[in-house]
Length: 301
Image (cartoon, rainbow, N blue to C red; front, side, top):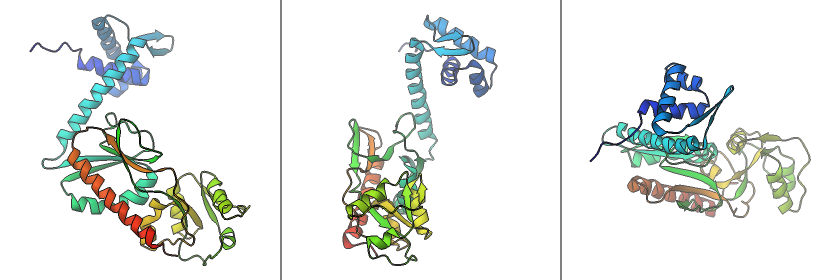
């Protein structure tokens, strides 16, 4: 087999860093070399390829069209090398499972239950990344992601984690609430805006109370506030399932109808390491089913 005709690895690293920073100087700082060395490596790479990769403008460095196309391929190659290296560095006898999920799902559903999963599968070494952006399984070195939305999505294996609904929850330390009018007198905890509670009261044939309230930008924070007795949160059922089972929260009113959106486990089709993904999927199914059965039996009020 003939030797591969590849450019210098150092030149490719210089190109990728320069393209990412749009600066030879910043690339040099990252790579711990001089700016002149980076410029020389890029020039040699361009000469080898026979075309320019950058437009060198006054006080600006910009990729050419060829440079943009080349960057996509180089980044993908580097991502694959980094992923393969990470797998080799996993201790002998263990497999690594990298999971990406939102901060809300991570803190209120997954993390409190992870001990159960690791006890059942001690050969798996878990890495958890909190993220709400679209999962790039190669670039981010992720095996499986959990995302909220209206699935399924093409080109991905998708497992719907049960139905989702909104349920009013509060600490059992708060005074008992038996009607929507009594609830309107309580402190309401909102997420992003007041639309959720407005829709809930509208469904009861009432207008939402016009008074001061507390507004959060993360649902997990509103649930924490409810746990602390600061008011009543309108939360997704999965995120408060464990707290309701442990009776650190109660549900003074019935859950709302099923939402179109739900949490989904997603991963690439025909991916590697199907066994560890199957183990995780099976554990998710059983855990979600336990939550569903508890909800069907009636939440504590």
